Length: 89
Image (cartoon, rainbow, N blue to C red; front, side):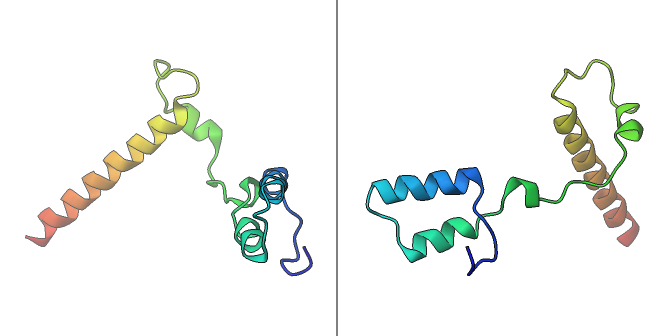
């Protein structure tokens, strides 16, 4: 913990306990586990839910909003790429 200046998450501690019980816990294993990204360390997109929610059709099922937004962004990126390639001609 002092080497990484961090404490393990519950998931990381559970992994280390499992490796220890199997007799496979080593400094390399600990190092590998401690270098994993913790869920609370991931950056979240910085946008307003209100602005996005009003653009998502009511037909999109609950829980499918993220997929809808990702597909919309992928579609828009393809549109921009086509536009750039047409301008280059």
